[in-house]
Image (cartoon, rainbow, N blue to C red; front, top):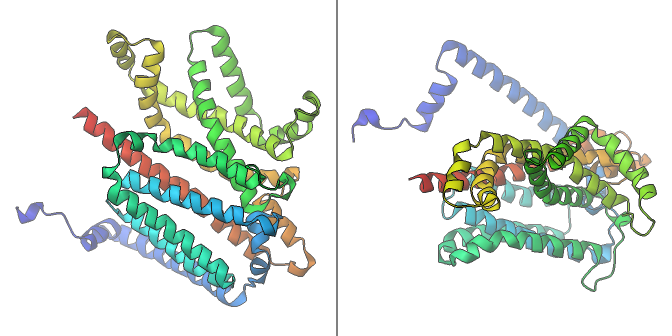
Length: 401
């Protein structure tokens, strides 16, 4: 190979990107100095002045709210199942490769499993559970990536169907189905309630958004107008207004036996709200699809339903995937509004803790922990989106060849 065609080293690329010109070098040095000063100030505060007793004393409350202590084994079991499924999906998407993002994610996961329980001074049994869960996730990722090629193709295609089943099983474990002792929704709280509300809305708003996007482009006037009015009304109303309407009006509109409780009312409002934005993201993907694709499908003898399912939607959803996942991340962050309607989600639980006279003035510690928790959840969604996008792009490029 010609040495002139050899790719530059990592150090050479950094020098070219960060110090290509004198102005670039000055900006790089200024930014590094500012970031270093901020990181040093944050570390000095966290290690010397911050009082983390408020987090140590309320870690269980922030995690699961007032969920009965005797029944929390269900949550550990569900966490183990979710981590196993996540690791298996991660491995199936990446196969044997361990790109740099995956290595960074694995390193952060191990660091959190070691540092967080030690920083909270949790008992040895709880620390062992954290270590086992982190190890289970990475082991499932390694095993799925190493032996996924030995699985029948039908098993790999049907694997996504395991997630809806696991979700239903998880709701049964949390709520007390499957013959277990019931746990009222009023006892759910903290991170548990936030994830339940966000996941419920994410699971249901996606198919509803697709249906609305197709309805808005339908040739049937009533269906098109109805979808358009719904989307524009929801997008024009603030979420907090819809949450108050759902809490106060839904109980009057429905008979007493049919009206869901406050937790599920909020979950349905989040679902209907997010579906309008997902519909616009999917509509953008449908608009980006060349019209010749539909005409080619019709010329091959496909009917309208087959054209939509096998030609239009796969390509449109690939285009709309980044915007859709961005909407999911925004939805997760919007769950903080639930505290304004009296639900003890993660932010509502944090406010209750900060109102405790024993922990007055410890707001910075609590809000920093909340920011880290939300960042971890959003980063996990982002990493999963990038892995799926990489997989879909690879398949599309292979099919085009």
